[in-house]
Image (cartoon, rainbow, N blue to C red; front, side, top):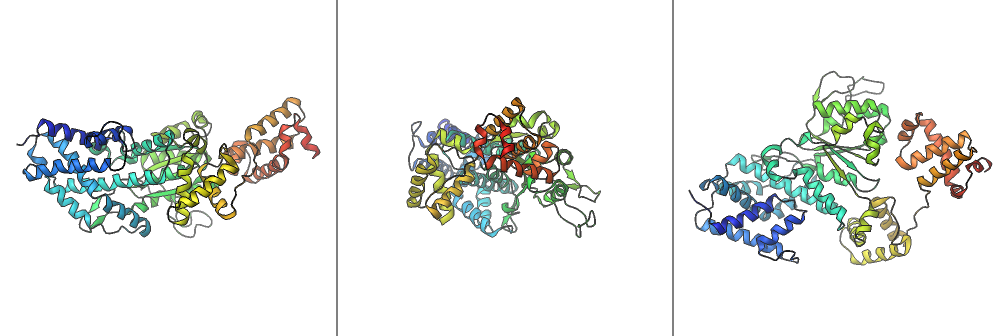
Amino acid sequence: MNHLSSSERCFFQLVHEAVYANPFSDLRRQKDNEIAGLFPGTSGDGEFETTLARVHQHIDRLERQGRASINQYDPNDQELLTSSFLFDLFHRYTDHFDRLILDQLQAGEQSLPAPFVSKAIDELCGWGFDRPMARRYVAMCYQLRRAFFFIDKNLKGRSDSMRRLREDLWNNVFTHNMGLYHRFLWSRMEDFSTMLLGETGSGKGTAAMAIGRSGFIPVDEKKGCFTESFTRCFIALNLSQFPETLIESELFGHRKGAFTGAVDDYEGLFDRCSPHGAIFLDEIGEVGEPIQIKLLQVIQDRFFKRVGDHRPRPFRGRVIAATNRPAEQLIGGQTLREDFYYRLCSDIIIVPPLRQRLGEDAAELEDLIAVVIERIVGEPSSELVALVNKQISRTPGSDYPWPGNVRELEQCVRRILLKQSYSPLATQPAKDLLSTLKNGLESQTLDLKTLVAGYCYCLYQSHGTIEAVARMAGLDRRTAKKHIDTGRQLFSAHPEMANLPDIGVARKI
């Protein structure tokens, strides 16, 4: 049996710790520098290439000495070498994984050939891995690269809150300990539901997609591909877009003849979900208690039934939910049943609003503009970034709070490219409307029509959907919409009313 020397063991221990560290963490950067022999805090082009080169040099030395097989070592050394061999293989195949990801995004749901997979498996077998384990490790390498790709590429930002978000998303996919994930949880992550909290337009859907497209997908070595395209592994549904009567069918599907209009069998969201993927339920706070109960049963029992069908059907994916409601509104049964909330919140991830991100680091605005510009024109353009950034600094200005978050910024960039300027619509904050209603109640000059209209319009400003207003005010949808429209006429058309001490004036306009 071979043994690592003390210096070899120290070096490969560093590599092992780097492999297990979150790649978006300071710890990972520290370990990479230590492997490269750099001083702590060193930063610059080329330092990671030095890290890779040193790892490959150590492995090459073992190979030349005939000592590069994990089976020749005791369990402790074997663990260190396993991590180091995988580190080397992963980074040598990064370009292959990236090309497959980009091509798969274009190709869609048909899993593309990955001819490099067999070669990678053969390399691991040459280091003493048995073939089934080698296949699993190659599949995990692909999973690691997808997770990094979607988190790093789609959730840019140098602010502390965005760094925390990227770390949180990585831990959501692989847990805080890659060793535990590899030993126990790589095939059990469907039991971990996730709740994303954040304002409208802050990027909750992007964060959910990063999780959903980063699940473990096995290798089909005979076909020379992975068993499934990751583009099939994420399905999203905005629950606020459907009336309560249709949500159940959209989620669970229905049998032909289950209700008027059900002329064919219909596969719902849970039917279409891949066992390697996730369902994203956006605006979860908009669904009523009956749907919450059914969703709770599916998440707990992993079975569901189509509308009009009594046969249980299995569900093997993850559930990711999101809401723009503040956390304090979710607990205590105000928005979600407590049992439903606690079943959803295996992990809670907060997506920060744009104003917080810019407050932490104003330079993040230019980074985001660059991302939007590249998405629009298909290539980076420092000229367009400078043009847009300069115009935003004039109007709406550096202190603008971006109430529509990243989604508003994207449209701002487009507006400037079209018209050379962006002027946000003036909106009345809900808190001012609440103060106005309170003043009218205290002075006892508020008529019922204005009170109900103002209250419904205030709810609509806070929650964004007619369905939410109807549920919270105890009204049917048509009546809720009528009151919202009235409130909009009274308060949006005459925003100066918000400054009047007596809202009863509204009756005279």
